[in-house]
Length: 338
Image 1: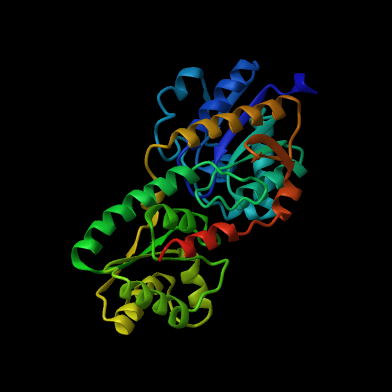
Image 2: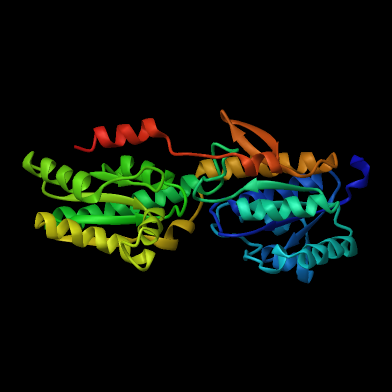
């Protein structure tokens, strides 16, 4: 069956993540090394449906490994959630002679890859998401860069907090997962870390902790929280809009303790920037492995990392897995943040 795979496509879908370009580069060069024609599909599944693609050569992916974002652009595609949209994508694949596709993205992107695989277009997913919330993989492309960016920004905020004896509540990304918040909080010496996976009591846990550490001589504080905590607060009726919750936490702290408090939402700055060594290397490994699978006609798989080794899972199996926060690491964060 390997001889039948003459042309493959590669696309990026969903939110961008540093390291996606490194994965694209690996797919293109590994594919060409296998004697394949490689089509770069622009703007995710939208581009696939609309036939927005171009053949890519070795030099087309030169000097992109160090760049953030994705040279193929990305988008979310509502049409692809419908049967007609998927069928249109299949028809386009047949028109362009595409025998398989590498899909770089998150859970939503993998569901699209699964749907295409079921219709006879083998797809292999590469986990590219800064939240590292793909359960089958212990690491996702973009995560290390996002954490380092968040750490860098929090360090700068700390300078101002220390100068003014303030409390800074810093919201990092992670709508359903607190991994960025937890690791950034430990790396920055945060007084507290709030994550969506573990309930907390603002009035009876966070405020008393600030009071306790203040009595021990601490004069400025950093609270790192995942954006998912804001959505949980909205669902609980505490605030109307998620973007208000970090401000609400800061106001609550100031009212209860008298410490001048400010809220900062880091937002999409965490998605950008030149990828770290780890993101470049892992993305290259995963891109290479995805091509090896497609060259054998193997689809409906997700490339993943387990115990620092590159492996792969059935997409159904991968989507069914659940990932939780490292409770031991959370315990460590709470213990050493006094």
